[in-house]
Image (tube, rainbow, N blue to C red; front, side):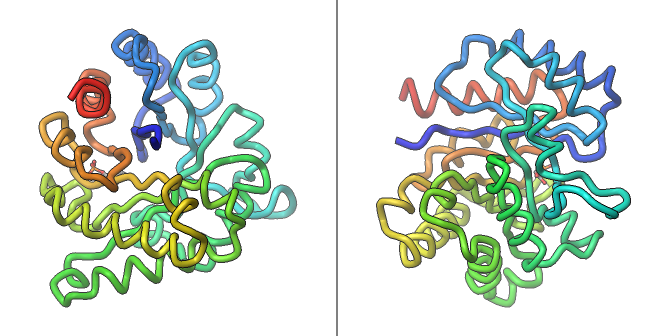
Length: 257
Ligand code: 13P
């Protein structure tokens, strides 16, 4: 069975002080959760203090982006080794906001994914179509390109420890989540793509998260889908109470029902 993974993407929110206060209150709400991976992704400036605040708990740390070189004259960038050094286990790569506002390409996503693995950071590769692409019937083709380009050249071990997130752009920050059927259809496609390149055994190990307007009240129906292995949460992860409710909803589906 794949361990469910719930990631809170804080985007451009929280000072260091706010970040520490948040993780302390989150931890008090989810301290008893052991069978789910709970991950928070602060800004770069929050990583170090959050890592210290999390030191003995069950919450893991992710960065929101990474550069592919490990050092050198690359003003403004942060390397995989630096993220590992401050205590990150995961790094989000290719988020649609980076593709949309900062010119992130599939080619660069792939470089970052390989660099992350080279430093034992697990990448969370984001994919997802725009509303225009969905309405034009291109969802499958768009996601296929993003997945195949993003994972190109990975070994079977590397892909097994890679997380793939399906985040339809039209569902991000809009309050309109994909229906469970829409999510399942794309997640199944992603798993099929991985199985065609590697094997069904390897594909069965890859965790595929859904993201886009995940809230406490829609988590259960999304996570109950057979190929939905977790959630990548934006807005609802910025408040400890609602993020904890999402974690609890996942626990209920996997470990009680
Ligand atoms: P929302 O949960 O605010 O829709 O954001 C999703 C997201 O972009 C997570 O990476």
